[in-house]
Image 1: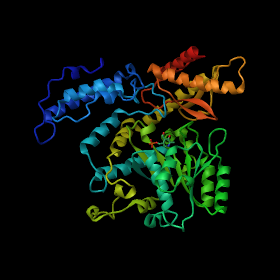
Image 2 (image 1 turned 180 degrees about the vertical axis):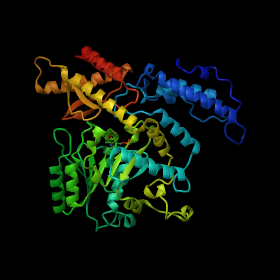
Image 3 (image 1 turned 60 degrees about the horizontal axis):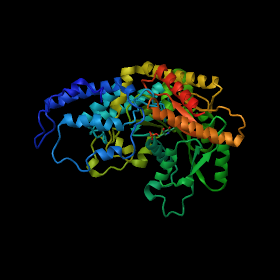
Image 4 (image 1 turned 45 degrees about the vertical axis):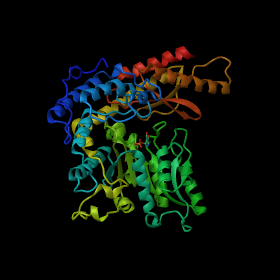
Length: 502
Ligand code: PLP
């Protein structure tokens, strides 16, 4: 790449390949360590010169890679040169400031340092004694995050890799609370088990249904509740569905509300939903994977109204808290149930202190756990609560600014409210003689073409969803490098594509 760091180009030859034992030599490690940090710094400086979406065809990278591993070790210079030559062109650059697709996210410098140190320590935090630092730092850091989000002190946090896994563990704990001896006897071959039910909104993330499938409850255990015109769960329809299920002998046990749905970032009415939960003694899990981070902004804390009474809540710092992937947090009020569902301690993992300490492996399916808390601790310390809140606040301002351009233009329309930093919109130019049906089809085709047109320029990346049967463009702002300039640029790109395609 022409932006490749100078030091990399003039890198001296390696000290020589490693002997038959031991790691890379100390001097070589130092030299390449420094050079790689320079490389990363240059990568960030020159990100905007790179296409956001990888401009390659499926199979292109594989075709350039040897099909068998090297017999002898290779010099680091050569390996890093291949990162430039082969890997970078095959990347979709999530750190690019014009990445607006899916939920835009980004890493940050303190997060990268945390990952680097974590790789060096290489702890497997399964027991307290295999990583006291990871175990205790996780508890403290997650309590800091809990305070920053204004969550109830009755909630304890635990880190998993993704929200899909956090939510699955929450549902497992909820099921453990039903007292059907599922841990001991399972679900198959049991005539005594009723159908258990989990309630989600039609807009909930597919990971909830996957979690239910993984837990052996079956897809029929998922009841999808309709949403209102703003894509929020209809709490009255929820109540009706539960009552009907109970009359039919079905056992409701868990409701999953979403704060920040994937398609539109809509916020389910948790204060109304929690009342239904309490009336029927059901577990309330809140999927706040995306939007939960926004609660660190004091004036946005209202998005978690009602969650102070939730049984569990998932939030992904790797989505909107500038934390390199992966780090998802599950807050849970009933750690005893989570432990009861997952703890299994064979002789070789028994320790004298086990009754006094928390061991991560007691709370999930994984034994070994990465030292993920380190990066989040470093991020919170480096930016501080105010610094994190300021960045998220700015993303929301930029999204509202973009939404106002959409609203003011006769050629574009908003398709959902914009509570946070996600805008759902489409082009809607009128053409004389259109019928309702031809217009609907035409606009779908037009908007898909606009999205592909913008993405093909490599200067911005958007994604889509379907709302009320309309192809909907999504612009998500969540990257630490995104500024007003990038939002203006994508607006210009969208209008250029519209002018070409209309
Ligand atoms: N829940 C919601 C609301 C999401 O938007 C997403 C991903 O975008 C997920 C869950 C799944 O996240 P993860 O990739 O961490 O499993």
